[in-house]
Length: 348
Ligand SMILES: [Zn+2]
Image (cartoon, rainbow, N blue to C red):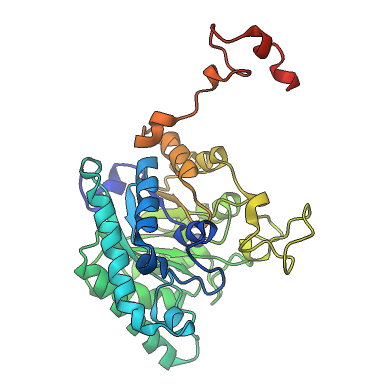
């Protein structure tokens, strides 16, 4: 198989597991709020293990955990000096994890994200954005990544800066917007129009990631698919976000009255969780709509990824442990099970 993302997408779906920030927060290795991935320096073995779990579940892409390890985030926590080691370590961890599975033809990608310093009318902020993207893209290029994802960006103009930086470095660019509640970029473009402009500016893959659950992401995809001719990406969060609040930043849980501050984001989303089968349905719908870069963002766990891989007709490594309820003591069908237990299964 080719390492070239576009050749792979031309042949069929590519599965990409993301969501490292949330996974690390839940495990106790990363602080919600600033969301800076210091874990790649402090506990690299935990990041390696999560890469392994996603690979075993069928992710074709090992995404280096550089997300939110950028200059502005590190400034915010007073640790800018960690920027370069953090970025380089994350890239090395991803490469090493991929190298553990030489038979799988995995691709490794770097990423850049929303800088949080971009202001539409402040030209100096555009220059600063570009510098932030340049340093990250350069480190990723030096590490030999197969492509770079620009993600969770909500301004078209900021995305254009990221895209230009990636293309100027001679790399394949995947550009994924995070679209907030009004179904438009923050500078007022529909996702389809914004993606078309990116395609015209040289983007190799365009689409959406993060922020919205599968249904609210799917809602925006047909317009994108219709307006662009390049490959389209879709990587929702595995949460049941709604028409009222399409994104996960403003969800509440009516069944719980003890959540600090009232909003479930980012630490009490549990009750909104999509199960693995809902994510599998999303993957299938993507295929039917000719959306080939399919994945999952914040909230992802390995069981979601495996079910999405299975929905794509694959048997990833962890398929070895795919559920088989035929041998369950009460719900099972195996002839050797005790009738004493199977007869009362529905009453348990
Ligand atoms: Zn996300």
